[in-house]
Image 1 (cartoon, rainbow, N blue to C red):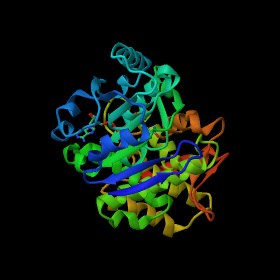
Image 2 (image 1 turned 30 degrees about the vertical axis):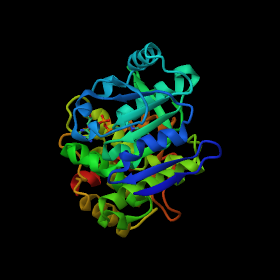
Image 3 (image 1 turned 120 degrees about the vertical axis):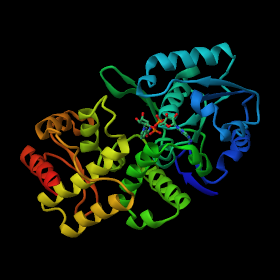
Length: 345
Ligand SMILES: NC(=O)c1ccc[n+]([C@@H]2O[C@H](COP(=O)([O-])OP(=O)(O)OC[C@H]3O[C@@H](n4cnc5c(N)ncnc54)[C@H](O)[C@@H]3O)[C@@H](O)[C@H]2O)c1
């Protein structure tokens, strides 16, 4: 296994990546939360039935709590239900929550841990590729409101993150694609050679990059914004295809990455070579870069203008001579032009 430290002043922790990494759970709990006498495992029903789940051992007595599937489960109601179940099982301040699942479980269990008793320790056992390369690392926890995604949350760092690549054996193909979208992002942010590496190294390299960005900007004041690379159009595509299930997050991000390159070229920030590299990386990860058929460009522009990361003008994270950076005040005509280029490619 590969151990990657997330270096934060008082809350640093390790991300452990590799086959069998989850076997270290009992050791991690004992070392990082020595006060714990019991564990609240938060997961989802289908996961509790997987063969690898039975082998998980937190080394202490534990209660199992399940949350439903899908984004609707990322709600304040789920957090209340979890906190009430924690209280009913006598979970105290010195005890620990262990989230076992994808980004949905780590977001909601992490947020419940952040607010229960005003904050108790938690560890993430990340079981999707997306959670292993991104969501489980960095301490952004939260839930959705009917008014929007991730509107309620907290920065609450885990005590440890275990990314066991063996558990990915049961992951459905669409979920793999979702994680590959984020791998494409990290490849383009720093290391395009990543796409040719074995899985364990890909996960470890993404975790290293996420750890470095989080260490530099724990609360998303500045540089952490580069992690939104490809996400402005990605979110708009997800919003436009809402409910149809046509496009998963990572698939939308892949399109968003190539769009961002095309837009950066229109703005004179990069040349053809970089655009070609974006297309190569996305294709090497077996992802598509074309806009879904029939999607209305003006509607996408509307969604992008509302993107919370955009503030009030159109802001994109774009490649350029000094690397990938937020660029403010992008003109709507350039955005529409780039969408047109993408549909004609
Ligand atoms: N906090 C962050 O920094 C951050 C970053 C990116 C995304 N997110 C959040 O992550 C969430 C998406 O996470 P996700 O893509 O991991 O989806 P998910 O957690 O909903 O998991 C997707 C599906 O895969 C199943 N699954 C998980 N692990 C499995 C395994 N090993 N074998 C078989 N099935 C398995 C789950 O039960 C679920 O049905 C979103 O809510 C998003 O907002 C958070």
